[in-house]
Length: 322
Image (cartoon, rainbow, N blue to C red; front, side, top):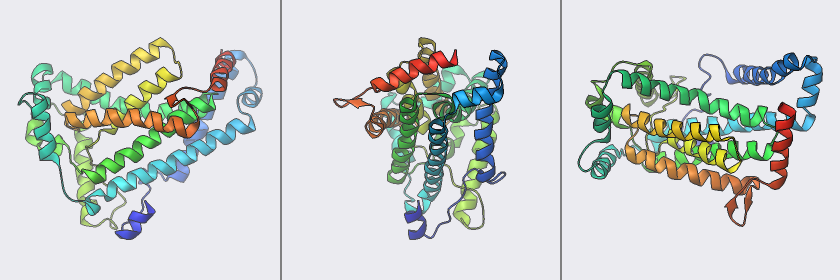
């Protein structure tokens, strides 16, 4: 991020700090997560908050959580800034080529048109919009669980590292093959959809892009439009694979598979991504799990596998949480 910023004379922004600065918002999020971890247990067990806090939060656990939150946000901020820099570094757009590839896969048909024909453009637009919004909430919640609420540091660090690798691989594809996505390159194909909560988001993202391209130093916004590859799909694939590899309950595995399928459909239906973006995202998500397994030591003979000691930690965590 720093190298690209200096080379192309571009500003570094706090990507989510336009309303509330990160140095205010992030500590509040951490404190809220700690309170949600401690207070309900204190109430249910009829014990003091201090006693539960001491039981749940050793010095090592607190250091792990805080270090994870800080490094996670540093990686996220770098990703968002690099994404904003893409149009300045490479202004060649690949939307036409990807749209053509999509039609070849779907035997001459546009996949979004197929979904609109099958699902309709009324209630389905509302439902797909809800899926998209739930994804936005689900990802930071899952990161909070991995860093702040689980006692298995190996599992938590594996998942958070994998999400960070998703960002790194994703932004590399943005620079290699910049795209706008169907909703911006062919908006007429989505004009029949009902207005939803996503409609305003799509309009605001294009407005932010225009401001940044006009003068990146005159706005606090960042440019966030990039379609290839789909990080929505990549992170969901990462989530599903990690859930399997660390042995989460069956109900979570089933729910994660269902939500992955809904995410693929929603991103194509709403025009955020081409179908090929979803395919590329799936590859990225799987690669991120494997790379993060190596980086966090959760690998045996080249196969991603939670360390035995970490599995014992998980069993102890379930007993402690009961």
